[in-house]
Image 1 (cartoon, helix red, strand yellow):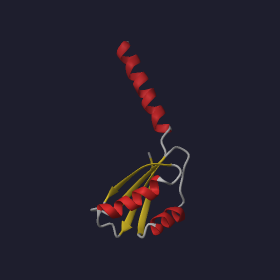
Image 2: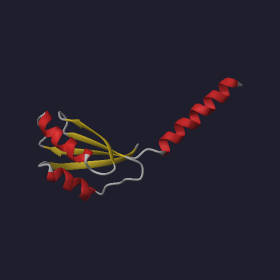
Image 3: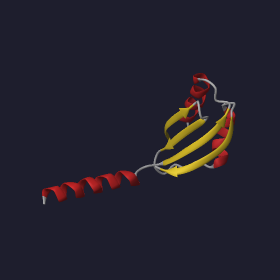
Image 4: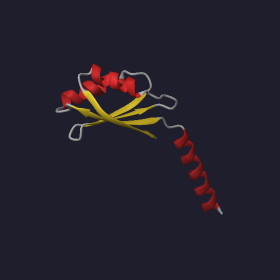
Length: 97
């Protein structure tokens, strides 16, 4: 009986965390060639209200932006941020976290 209660509690707690997550944006970016490039993009996104974390995969030209709960960015806003850092966004996908 205790095992069932434990599993139920863990399941409920885990489910609660999934509802509190924000949005994940995966942006394909042209021109990422070095860590300095990545730092410029990361710095700009981290200073943007609602951004929780940024991951950059230089080799694949991928910028992953995770937002806090309730924050969503339009494609135009993301294009503007990328353009302002001197790069070009090729594509994007949006996924819940």
